[in-house]
Length: 293
Length: 278
Image (cartoon, rainbow over all chains, first blue to last red; front, side, top):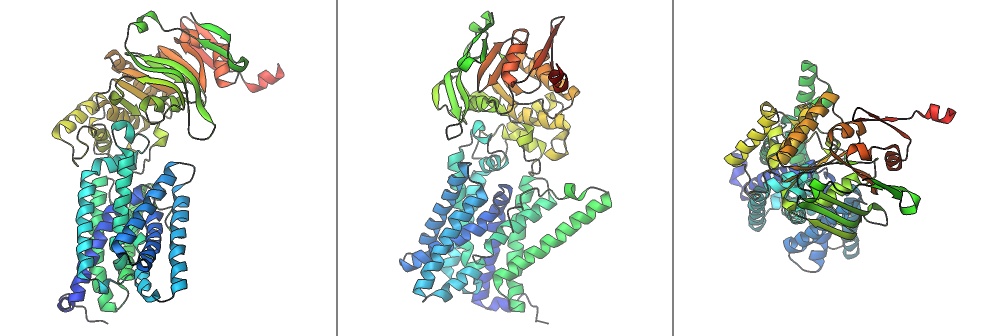
């Protein structure tokens, strides 16, 4: 049994950095994940992080700053996905599948050819929260504040676009501008949290807290609050679990989120059974989770 | 007044001229030879020439895929003509009520949140609703008899209540013109009558209404002006002139029985068995 102490690991600078980074990452993923889930684009977190991995490799080879190179790459990928989906002839999951896996494949191809920096990208794939630098923290802090501000300013328009994309333009929502802003927000979140959560685990951090929130409320604003708080709390506690049990930080955070989801869905089904309501009515998930696997 | 003539490719083409009182009203929408589609060579509507006047209550009839929703979207501005000319007055004062079938009923929003969306164009970058927005939403919800349902999730409402919530969202924006896509589908007869009476009241208060419907008998009984659409306009005019066997047959591509009785029009389908036997 490990020594479970909340104060003991705080003596280490790397742990404090990790704690702040994971809490912010969890919160910002939980916040933006609400739109990802309700737009039925759960797969986008998975795809975009893979696309950005390709961008990260290209920027490394081209000696461009990771955040600039990967950020631009991610933004363009998100825009391309939006654009392809808008044409309606290709569904979102197909668009994401094509754009992002091609980008990921490019990254893998460059790594296999160069063969000299695979260890750095192992961290990008699985997350390395214990290696968070102060620069990473500043960027993550700035992205969190920027995203929160943009979501506040675009709250009405993003909600209308998510709920009723066909009708929103008729009520003055500037759909092109809102979609572009959303692509920018999403790319910024994935780039800023990639080193902490890892390419393979970002999708879960974008999806599990919102879905859990959805099970607990029928109100959009409350779902957003629950998802953000759950993301922050599981990020915070996940780092402790990672330290206590010596497991990868990204995996600890996501496993904790999955455990919370399991408890909430079990409680929801149990409550439905007690009240004599059909299970389908108690689980208002619809097709939001269908694209996520 | 209704002219029946041979039209494009030999199809029946019946058009009614506007009523004299309509000529005096301001034209809010004017289609001139408008065609539109969704990419590729398939056109949802072809060579539409149609005017919507202020104060008009117009019903658009036609089978599935006839271009009814496209016509509404053209007025809304979410679909653009590929050819022809479309003139609009006050597009910003148009409100739209979508088909209930297109709504995501699992979405986490309450009835009041949906209604408030109709006010969001006023202060789009402020994340909360103003007290004026809430008061207006409450006033309209009270008018539509849904004032006690504000905190309910949209899925918890009956079909009629759901229709009223979306109608309320349209009305809180204080529209000059109201577009409704099949507002009578999926609701029971009593609710349908209530919705149509409500629309009549709104029309009498000066709101121009254009709605699509599949319900021929309801349209004949309640709507003063009808347009039969099948990619192009087959017939246009008051129900007693448009609801003819020829015009409806050309619109729906089926044999339709039309009975006129004491000023009322009744529409029915001819059973296939009897038809074949004959």
